[in-house]
Image 1 (cartoon, rainbow, N blue to C red):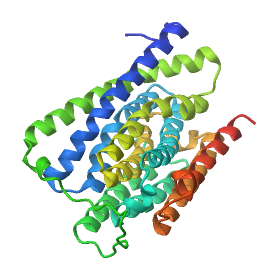
Image 2 (cartoon, one colour):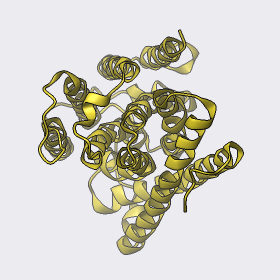
Image 3 (cartoon, one colour):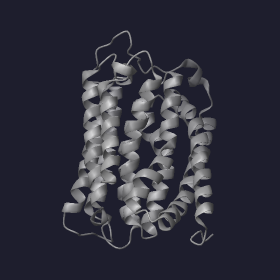
Length: 341
C-alpha cells in the first residue's frame, strides 16, 4: 500500500494507532520474558538484554532498516540513537515506581554493569564511524561488522558474569537478588516461546507501519528527519521499554527492569549496523547529521552517569530517585533544548 499520498491527519492517525499497539503488546511481553528467564535458567539480566531488548526494540529496528532502505539514512540513525537516549530516561522513570530504594541500588549486579560498559563501547564505535574513511564493502562499512562482533563478545561476557561471577555487589536489606520463581519453572516452554514470537511479530509489524507514517509527518510538517527521529519515532517505538520496565518493577523483577533497558540499548546500537546494510548508497555513518552526533555524545554521557550510579549504589536519593536518574533526566532535557536553539 502506497502511503506517500496519505494526508497529514491520516498519517498521524496511523502513527498513533501503531504506538498504541506497541504499548499494549509491549506490556504483555514483559511477563513472558520474566517467565522465560526462570524457565530457561539464563537469568533476568541476559533475558532482559537479549529477549526483552530484542522484542521491545523490534519495532524501532524495523523502522530504522525500512527508513534506510527507502533512502532516509538520517531518519534511520537518529531513530536508533534517539531511542537509546529516551530509553535511558525511561529507566529513571521506572526508578520513580520503586519506592523502597534507588533502583540501581536494589538491582545491583555484575551483568548489568557489564551491559552498561558494553553500551558505552558500542556507542563509541558509532561515534567513530563518521570520522573514518568513507569506505565500504558491498555498501557495508567496516564499523558495522565490528559492532556486531563486539556485541556478540560482550553478551558472552555478560552470560559468564551471571554463571561465574568474579565480582559481586555488597548485599544490603534492599538488594533484590535474581532468583527463579518456582511457579515459572513449571510452565510449558513451548507455550512461552510461541507467545513470545507472536508478540514480537506484532511489535515488528507496528514498527514497519510507523516508518511511512513518520516520513509523511516529517514531509508535511516541515520538520527535518533528525527531529522526527529523535523526538517522534524514537519515543513512540520506545514505548515498550517504558511499559516493560515499569511492569517489571511492579512484578519485583528489578534485574529484568534494569537489564531490559541497558541491554536493550546495547542491542539498539545494532540498528545502525542493520541500517548500514539496508542503505545501498554507501556508508550510512557518513550521513549522520551534526544534531545526531550531539545526541550520541549526550547518550554516552548518560550511560557514564548511569555507570557511576551503579558503582556508587546510593540507597535513597532526594525525591525517591538516585543522583544518576536525576542526572540522566537533566542531560536529556539539555539535548532537547539544544535542538531548538
